[in-house]
Image 1 (cartoon, rainbow, N blue to C red):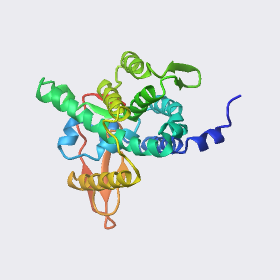
Image 2 (cartoon, one colour; image 1 turned 90 degrees about the vertical axis):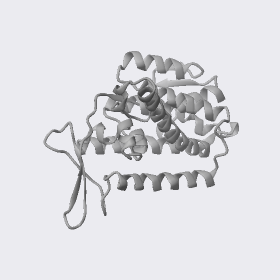
Image 3 (tube, rainbow, N blue to C red; image 1 turned 135 degrees about the vertical axis):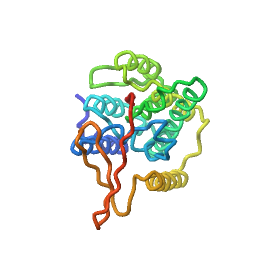
Image 4 (cartoon, helix red, strand yellow; image 1 turned 90 degrees about the horizontal axis):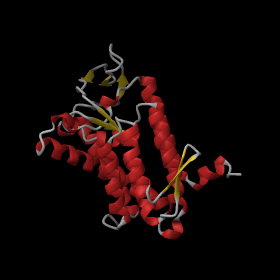
Length: 270
């Protein structure tokens, strides 16, 4: 008999909080009918100053299947929080989840830049990435290096040896889900190896709080400079075409600023 779910939640507090947050954001997105083109990360949006999308894209999902698949894998990987004796644990999990979100997002943009500028593949200019799987693939890779005897359990019945899981999952999702973000998943794997091999190291509470502060600063600044933030608060509502929701920001005096929708030729599920 397995452990009671409440006991497992207490053993994986950070993982549980991330899953709860992603679920709440998905519910909000569904309720407000928000399109992925307004929260996802694309090269065109980034060069227009929408750096905040590195964060919003990671925590947003566009379908219940997308959310369940990522959160199921993340729940299994939450075992990292129980490996404090190996130098991992909850603090490590929190510190490097932050790193994985930012580094994998930057790597995706770097890959898009290379494909567009060097290989003239203009298609990648508007391809939009969305989802938490960059981080999921990162933790999958870290665990594969640190605890290769572990297994990745999906949906409670599918079990994969963790040592092969990153590349097995990369190939599997690319074949089964054509929209899956190969570059996004690969960036998570690269980020995971950089952390597992000590190429990115030294994170502690001081550096994590400092990094979080800078993320919030750049997030708010880029919202304002990109025209996506005005005065007191953010209000998201749909327009006539429900597939192309708009983002407006209203002050107490009723003045609004509406962000025009970006043309999107593809979406990559992260």
